[in-house]
Length: 515
Image (cartoon, rainbow, N blue to C red; front, side, top):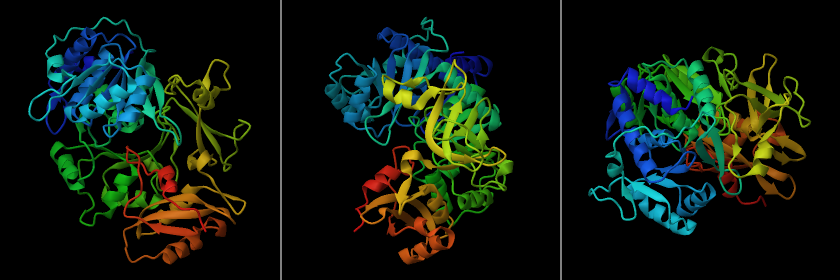
């Protein structure tokens, strides 16, 4: 079914229950349903039609959540845009998807205006929240005016194979690509994830990740699907304030990314069990180093920890059942429910256990392709064993053990060739993270006239007394000679993407060629 039906159904069953908690407003399911209906009617009145694309250019606020479901109710396709996006990129997205409307905030209107001018799209419908002085920016319709509409259903006649979401993901090079997801894709992904996380209607899920990041977005989609409560925060910049919010709201689910885990583990004033309401923690975006997993389990003894792997093109691929953590701390697990995940060699044949190859995913959550980018789509979606389907080639190298549990090796295009050998950066990073004096690390290849590429490690220390020689000696004790970093650089922080994920590409761009 179409995904907005989960909101409508829960509003009918539990109108008074809290659906959303933000710093400025709490919304019950009834209020959430009413506001989304009002905004959907306003969008329809402004000319937004079935399958039109509407951008949501906001930070984590109640208006963003309302906007997403209002767009679905209008029969249109929502595209969440990170609030840190600059005008040239926003202009590209406006043009690429032929956006019909953009819903934004007053503080972002200068960027919207510049992007609109760059795109040449003078017909774009723009609705904005009010500025702190209560004024609506020029060239925009007031968000409050839109919410004054009567909440009447929009007769769009959409079905579940219509596009629900167009989420732009940045590749290593070139312009961002729009990942096309239908209502059926989102339904399948959210059903699978809430199944293995054992989510229940009484869950209270905290989200500090941007709604423009699919991991953050799905916290809201999953909460609304099961009738749970979402606590929406803007960031994890002030961890103690977030911990206080967890205690105040009785949060049961806490999604993490590795940079957040590293921040928590550097805090020295935390006692095991200090957040007793937590029932589970989850991690994706990049694999957690096993030492970080062990320390998180010590800090949160009452919470189940889920290591997961996914990519925007199918949302989620694998999860490690928490009971397997002791036996396989380096694994990202098995395929999520109603999904098949397997490793293939260069000829597309299934690789035997222990042999690295590309991970392939098949299931109802796999994207429809990239918006107006057939060449990129054909690289990722290829014919499967069954003649009627295409499967997703992830571009990531994995290997499986004898029982089918999967281990991330690295991105195919991240592999470093040095001294004629191939090195997966992830393997070196795992050893670096095992050192108690290292908070974060990323490994890249640096052009070298003799080696081809030299192994370089960028490191954030938790023990400032460590030297580069200490780190090289540590690596030499655990790695083959050709895998030991030749270069160690200390940083106060690692370069990250807008979603908080350490960026190997940005890290490599900061390095000078070896002499």
